Image (tube, rainbow, N blue to C red):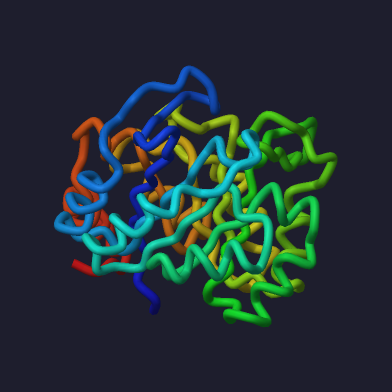
Length: 251
C-alpha cells in the first residue's frame, strides 16, 4: 500500500507566505524559505509553493524564491502560479522544483499539459483545480479563484489525466481556509473518476479531518496551510494520529 502524504502549502504573494479564507481576506503568514526549511525538518512528505497572484498579475513566478527554497529542502517540491509555457516549466524545474503545477494556463491552453508531460514526463506535471460547488456539480475557477472557467471540475480532471497530468491538486473553494474539514464529496468524486493521485486541499482544521479525507474522500495526499503556518499542529502530530488510525504514512 502506498503511504498517504502530508503536504504543507506555501501560498506566496509579493515574497511572503499568506493565507486567506475562501480565497479572500489574505493575511501574512511568514517567510517562505524559513517555513519550507521548518516543514522539511518536521517530516513533510512534500511541499507545494503557489505564487497566488502571478497569473492574475500576468507576471512570472518568482524564481529567486524557488532557488532559495530548493537549497533548503530535501523533499519533493512543487511550484505553481504564472506558468504559461513549456519554457516557463523548464525554468522552474531548472531553478530546483521537482514538479510544476498548472491551473489557469492549462484551462486556457490544455496542450500545455500534454506538451509538458511529453517534454518532462507526467510525474512532473500537476494539474491544479480550484473548484466551487454549483448546484449538484463543481465549477472550475481560474486566476486565483477570481474567474469562473465555465468548466465542470470532474470532467476537467478526467481530461487532464488523458492529456498527461501525473497528479491532481484539488482545492475546494467552499472549504478553503475554513478549518471545517476537507470537501469529502468533491474529493471522493474526482478520486473515483481518475487513475492518478489526488491531493485534497482546502479546509483542514483538526486531526480527524485528515483521516476522513483519506478514508472517506479516497485522497492520496492531503495539503494544508493555516494549521501549519500558525503552529496549531506539526506534521509529525498528524502522522502519529494517522498511524493510530491505521492509515499508512511515512514516519
